[in-house]
Amino acid sequence: MAAVEVEHLARRYGEREALSGVSLSLGKGQTLAVLGPNGAGKTTLLRILASLLRPHAGEVRVLEQRLPEDSWKVRGRVGLLAHEPMLYRSLSAEENLRFHARLHGVGAGRVAELLAALSLSERAAEPLRMLSRGMVQRVAIARTVLHEPELLLLDEPYANLDPAALELVGPLIGAESGRTRILCSHDPAGALAEADVVLGLRDGYVDVQGPAGEVSVGELEDLYR
Amino acid sequence: MSAQREGHATAPPEARVPLAPGTLPAGDRAEVAAVPLWPVVGAVLRKELRVELRTLESVPGMSLFALSTFVVFHFALNRTSVEGDLATGVLWVTLLFAALLGVNRLFVADAEEGGIDGFLMAPVDRTALLVAKQLTLLCYLAVLELVAVPAFALLLSVPFAHALPDLLLVLFLADLGIAVVGTLVAALAVQTRARDLLGPLLGLPLLVPIVIGAARATSPLLVAGHSGAPGARWLALLALYDLIFGLIAYAVFDFLLED
Image (cartoon, rainbow over all chains, first blue to last red; front, side, top):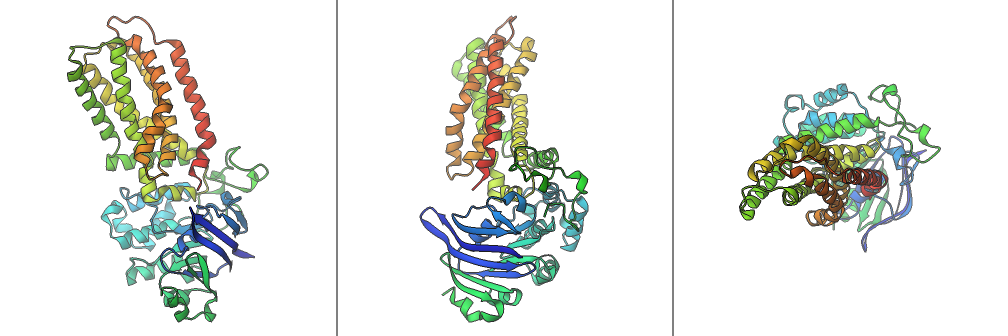
């Protein structure tokens, strides 16, 4: 059974088509890389799959549930890492994670475990506004995986991370995490290396689609020209 | 699959309970487990108060506005003291506008920092956010009045010490209404770009009945040598308005959070 199935998905913002006729299928444990220039519809796709936006046409099934009708059955099973970290800048990393842990019924031990895994323990008590962007991104990653989601929706997850941080986040959100992932990226070569399936969007339409082994870096780079 | 999964690093299954009746489609309630309502209300309320204590973006502004307004009235009215309807009008108009400052800020941190999305993706009853925000606004109003009411008495020499218990009852009922209506309006306004304008525009007409009820109930209390009690029918009106808008808020809040 597929973890994500989308057929003829469309979404508009006013008169503008943000997504049109998008179809895809992703098996459990697989990674889908979504590429495309700014405004191509990547973030809209992620927000629909996260049940934060309603599709205007088409069928969407996530973790065997229809969206938006059964979105409440999907909540708590999906982790979204968006451009906004969904964290409060005046609160510390620990306070933010504890807040989200309470929302998901997760114990405090998991918060400490993630802070240690991401080398954030020493600065866990400082307000987020005092931390660098890379550190805030690590806290956001901890928030995303706090409740052990089955499906990860990752919008440029490696932004602002240095090589050492990339190694730390790998087991949590990388291919080695074993989770089903949808990964938005602007790095064709990096995305191809991580993905099982690739989707290239341009102006809301599917431009490139197929197994990662059958799509070339050049085809994906053409999306940006 | 339910939210109670094998290997899921969560609280023990017995700590999770089905969503409250009425929040899920009939027939599916048994399949879904969610974090209980009140711990979530507590978590959101603690977070709200902690954010306010760190940023001081709402309550100090509300209090300073009220103090400044009383100073302006003190000089503009050019009287040594006020009482009765005039004192009531000064008090409630000032509290209303000060409250609107807090209403306008109620969801701003969530909207600007993405906190709403984080909440919407959690397996929780969305009523928890409504209740927590209402309690937050109630706390803001209580602190505002701790500052504003003594300042009002001092600056405008209003005689009400003898009627304090009655006045506290009126303040509580009015605050409850402002918190209920204000949260609803704030949730609606924050989704728009013109939220600073829309909040007061939507809020003022809905808050007018509260001000009328509160002012009529307060008026007999702010008279030198007062011996009467606040009008029972005005207290009943306030309580009824609180109840009606509490039910409306409960019914429509989910839809306000939807895309």
